[in-house]
Length: 254
Image (cartoon, rainbow, N blue to C red; front, side, top):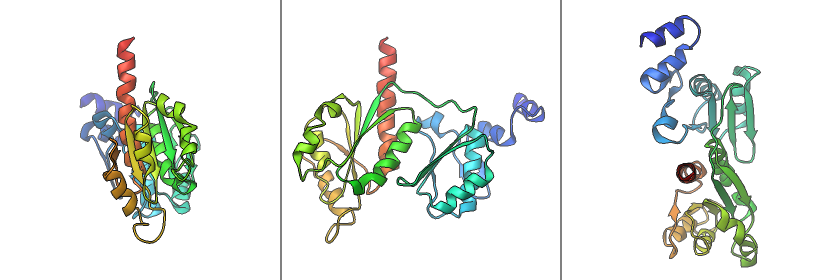
């Protein structure tokens, strides 16, 4: 502890960084940021912007940057992005994916992780792109190589079969689909890699809110894992943990 205090006194360590090392989290007026999650869990903490004011989002993003060098924010609105950009230093790199509603900010001295593993993100249709993009954001943040295979729904099986080689080459698959949610079941029957199904709230009428897609994936006769409706961040994180295990195994085999 004395070394931490001396580092703070010398200006080598910020109070936020010191708090994160001591407690494992940082306390702000907007809530607590779990700065130790990536070390403890292997997956980074994400800041959900929904339900928070832009000022609260900016405060938590600042805490993330100060304690880990990076901030990952999901479900952001334009006001959230503007609030973050207003408070961060010009040296901070801010990347906003408007379609995925995500924001990733990195300090200039932040060194991103690199995994020797590839994750393919597959969508049934263009309407699934937002949820798929959220999964891609966290997978890239965890260091995996991400490949996109889009608009290959089961209405024409030839579309997914045309990408069979890429599907089988990936180390883990995230498959997002709305409507009846059949695509993950089909894909899981074609590959020997883990498949994570993401039901998407696209469609209309009975079950069009993602309920039909969720039920279909849960009843899949081919083996796959399923996350909640529109849970792109959760699917991306799970896929990232698989990718990290694959990468570690490859490193150990060398």
